[in-house]
Amino acid sequence: MNRQELVNLIRERKSYLCVGLDTDIHKIPKHLLSHPDPIFAFNKAIIDATKDLCVSYKINTAFYECRGIRGWESLQRTVEYIPKGIFTIADAKRGDIGNTSSYYAKTFFDTYQFDSVTVAPYMGRDSVTPFLGFSEKWAIVLGLTSNEGSGTFSS
Image (cartoon, rainbow, N blue to C red; front, side, top):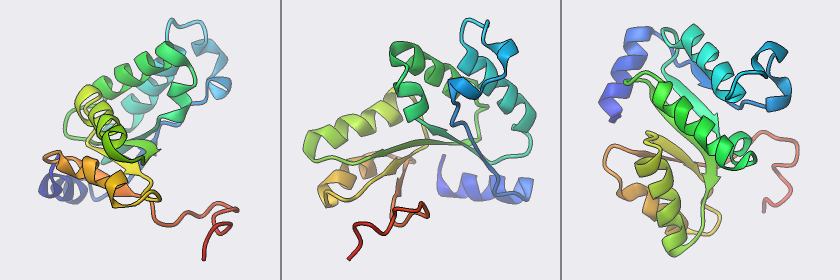
């Protein structure tokens, strides 16, 4: 999704609403736990309830990665289920040097088809640059956070 498409969607919906899909298996309603993929079943219900209201979905990848292959499959099903034309964010906070960042970028932009990925720039320019080489894809660079310990390493 390019900038103009995102701006148009925001104007059309008169909304900046981004729905987080930070799906914790321990907080999913019990009736969904018997589903073959309870995380996807929960996400599907959330997407169905919000797809006409929001302009984006943010998926925190940690909630999926910790479940191994099953988690990655849930993530893929979720991304594929999100209606086309709604901005997707892989909240992955990736940032490493050299070809490692290149592979992270390929993972989220090519394999999973996210529109954007959150990137931690702490290792320098070469940790962000690989994410910038994808046409109509976005790198959301982490700059400042609001968590309690965010100032621990500030100068």
